[in-house]
Amino acid sequence: MKGPFPAILMALLFPAFLHCQEMPEMVYIPPGTFTMGSDGSGYGQDEAPKHEVTISKGFRMSATEITNLQYEQFRPAHKELRGKDGFSSGDDEAVVFVSWYDARSYCKWLSEKTGRHFRLPTEAEWEYACRAGTVTEYNTGDSLPPAALKHQKTERNLHQVSLEVAQGEANAFGLYDMHGNVEEWCLDWYGPYSGKAAKDPAGPREGLFRVTRGGSHNTPVEYLRSANRSAAIAGDMHSQIGFRIVESTHTPKPYRIKEEKPLNQRKVSRKTYRWPNASSEPFWLEPIPFVIPPSDGTPFYKHNHQPAVTWCRNGDLLAIWFSCDNEHGREMVVLSSRLRRGASEWDPASLFFSVPDRNMTGSSLLICPDGTLLHMNGVSNSGDWQNLALVTRFSYDGNGSSWSPAFITGPEHARRHQVIAGPIALSDGTLVQCCDAGAGGHDGTAVHISDDGGLTWQDTGATIPGIHAGIAELGDGSLIAFGRGNSIDGMMPVSRSVDRGKTWQSGASVFPPISGGQRLVLKRLQEGPLMLVSFGENGMFASLSSDDGKTWSKPVLMTDGKTRTLNGGAWTGSFTMDSDHAEPKGYLCCTQTPDGTIHLLSSRLHYRFNLPWLLGRI
Image (tube, rainbow, N blue to C red; front, top):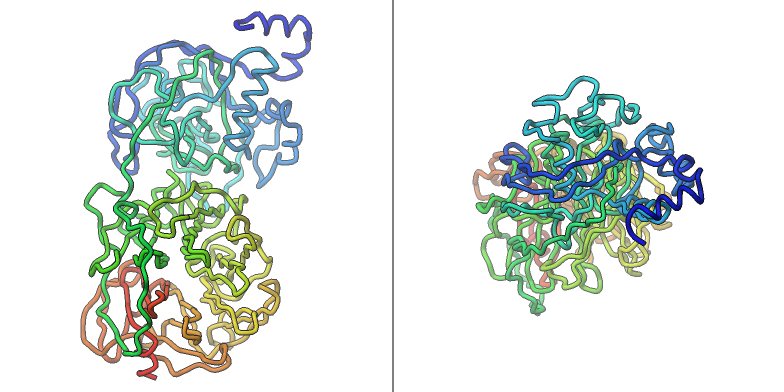
C-alpha cells in the first residue's frame, strides 16, 4: 500500500511508535528553480560552472541532522561510540561515526517502520534547501553569525565542541545547521557538473566517493559555504560527518557521464615488456625532472612533495606525489607522471587520487610479486595530516591504466597511518608498509604488515626510532630499518627486528642524522647488496652493505662530477651539483627495474644509474 494510510494505520495500531522512536521533525521544502554552484574561484574549482537546477517536486527534509537518540532507535549499539574522540555524547547532538551505508540503512529502517519513504537528499536538493532562496555565500549572507561557528579552523588535535542541533537560527525553510556542525552525507556519487540546466539531478550513476555537504566543526569557514562540495569514501566514518534525511516518493535518477581518464591512465601499453639482462657496464644518466606542470587544468599547486615510484609490467615507470599550497590544506591532491618505455621525458602531471576536501598526505607504490600494483595512501578527516585513515587500491593490470575503488584498510582516523614510500614484499610474500607514527619530527615509524596481498593490514604495535623510515629484509628473514630524527649518540638510528616488526632493537648507525626536508632510501638491490641513500655534509650519498648491514662501504657522493645548477623542488629549491657537492635535500624514493637500472627520485628529480657505477666509485 502506498500513500499516507500505512503510517496512519501504524500510529493507530502502535500509538506509542512515533513518540518512542523520536521521529525527526520534518519540514516541507517547496519545488522551485535555483542557480547551483559557484564561479569556481579559489579552491572551489569543482563548484563550477554555475547552472540552473529545477527541483520539480516538493519534499520534506529533517529540520536538523539526525541525532544520537534518533539514530540509536535503529542501531542501539551505536551508544558505545558516543563521546568518541570527545564528540557527540548527548541525546540531542548530531550523530557521527556513521558511514554512508549506515545513513542509507537508517533511511530504509525508518521507511519500513513508518510506511513512508525516506532517503538521503540528493546534492541538488541539499543545496536548494540550504540556500532557501538566497544567492549569497551562506544562507545568512556573505558571512555566518557567531552562533553558527564551531571552531572553524584546522587543528592537529580537534578542538572539542558541542554538536547539539538547532542552537542557532533556522533558514527560511525552517532548517537548522546547514552550515557547519557536521558534514552531511548525500545520496549522490561525486562527479563534475555538466554545466547544463538540469531537472531533479542526482549525480552520476557510478563513482569513487559519495558527496558530503555543509562543512563541519574544526573546518575553515569557507568550506561551510552553500556551494562547497566535499566527498568521502562511502565506508568512512569519523567525528565530522553525520546526515539528515528527506521524505519523498520521488527518487531522482542518476545520469551517465563519460569522464576522460587522466593522462597517466591514457594510451597505456598492455603488452608485458621483456626486460634485457642487467648491464655490467657502469652508467649514470643526467638527472631529469619528473614533476612536470600540467597544461590541461589539472589541479597543480606550488608545493609538490613526498614522491613514490614503481616500475610497471609494460616497462613504464609510474611516479606519484602530493600537490598543495599548504601541507595542512584540504586542497591537496595526489598527482602522477608516467615515464613511458623508451621516452626521454616524463609526461606532464595528471590527477592520480583525490578525495575532495581531504588532506592526502603520504603515498606509496609497490609492484607485488604477482605483478599487481599496490597503491596506499593516507586520507584525513579534515585538513591536517595527523589523523589519517589508511586507504588501499590495486591495479590488476600491473600497468596503472586502471585502478580498483579505494577501500579503507585502517579505518580509524588516527596517528600511525601517514604512509611512507618504499613498502616491501618479504621472501614469504608478506607485505610490509611503514607509516609515520605521529605528526612530530621525533614520533618514530609504525610498521604494518599484510599476509593476504594487501587486502588487510595489521599494525604490529611497535615504533621504530626515526620518522620516514626505510626498511629491508635481511638474509635470515629479520628486518632492518633506518629513520630520520631520534638520533642515538649523535648518529642516525638503525633498528633490527627478528619477529616481523613486533619488537625492535635499536642503536647508533655509522651514518649522520638527517632532518627537515630530507628522507632516506633503504633498498635491497636485486644483485644482493643493501643500498642506503641519505644525506651528509656535502649532500646526497649512497652506501652499500654486502653483509646484511654489519658493515657499510664508504659513502659515494651522488654526482658524476659535472658542474650543473638544478632545481630540486619542494623544500630543496635550486642547488649546484659538482664533483664535491650533490643534492642537499629531498624526499627520496627508489625502484630498481629488472634490467638492473636503479631509479632514484628526490622531490623533483629522477636519477638513473646502476650498481657497477656505485661499485666503481667505492
